[in-house]
Length: 503
Image (cartoon, rainbow, N blue to C red; front, top):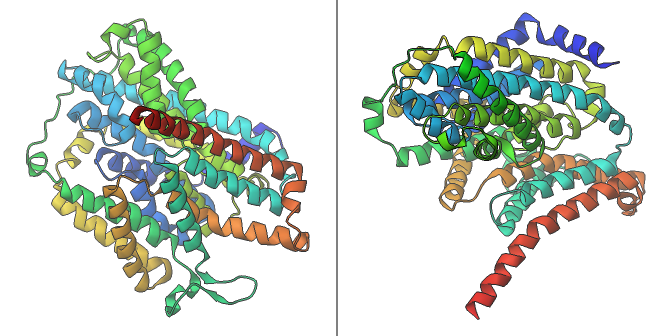
């Protein structure tokens, strides 16, 4: 099938009334949670994982994906109007966006963010569709040994590209893999690491871990820094002119192009993420913009560049997930978990075995970006008014939703207890300033890692050389080794300098 046939299949899947509805609901939820500081796409996707059990595979992924990139739109609204970034990726947009709002150009800033987001998002989707087809050829080369090496590369990547110390990330990743081993052994039927808890014979539910570590922990941290004044006295900017002038368009277009290029590259790299893309987009503008001296004082380039970068990255973030089965961020790890829930084996085979799901998701991402442009500008007033909902009302609702979600996954009260335990663990990690992402990656990739390893040993009759004898498998392991070296060298250099300084 060529690209046009694949896109036709994608449109036939994405344009069903059910999937259009999922995309619309996801965009609305994503925009809303993007507006609320502390309630980002990560915790929201974690909370909504349980409802995907009763959905079709395409519908589940369309809903969760639209929440993810919809949050990038919503985060810019509060950053521009209230100088309060709903998402960390919108922190840079806040600098010039809020200055424009103070000058009575809030509408132009919001329109610039929407236009830049749509253009870059559309390009990101097109790039994803273009590279997907060639990568289907790689799928025929993958066996159990290659999948094992690929999972090793994914786990190493989550450590090497983490902002935390390698030892902390490695410890959390190993702990996550060990948690994934709890339950019943698939081959022998023996119970593993269950202790005296019968409820653990089916293993630890991913949704309980994800919602606890990200959802419940975030609530606890937000309550710690709760500010009643923000509930009662939100400072809203007055919106007058909405459409950019011809001069504005002339200035923003080069920034959109540069931001799209930067975001597309960084989004495709595992671990880089939308926040890094947003900061990189702003740095590029400071270097190449013709109006670099105005940045920080309300320059339209300071909005167009970062917003284009983070939305391009939000789309190309899916490349490594959908084509190789390697999640490039924490949200992508949750989406990988959703694929496993739907009995879809992540990796190159997704394109071949589930073409309707794959291409339906890609087309829905373009449709979702179009929906966000059409919906966001007319609904700005509604979104801002929603910010007036006090957090003291909001957090109990979120907590109840988490508890119901944890129970619904397996109809087990025990999972609610697990939710609380992982919530405490997540809170401790946040206070220690340690990212829980490696823990989640280990939990998600652990079963695939173990299953692939054991199947490879069955094929080779217990000979470990099968992992090293196959060229692609060996190449992936070498890539994982290089990642370790690249991440370890700066750390060793830093420690060496510290030793010489003390001497």
